[in-house]
Length: 76
Image 1: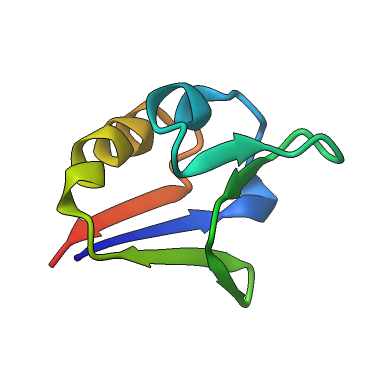
Image 2: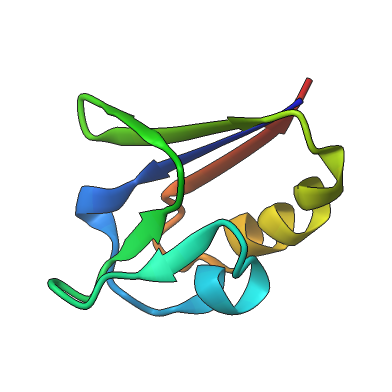
């Protein structure tokens, strides 16, 4: 199980997450911020829980590349 969390309000729109994990992230045409696809929002945190462990590496790279450190990735 992989859990990815995005604090979207703090996104600066650098696009690194989309480049490194395009299956989970996309840039919004409305405000230029990152969108965590298929996630659920709760108090400004967007969370995706996926049983696909194969997505862990790409999303970990996206987390490490994020200049404002708003992505969390856990494997449980």
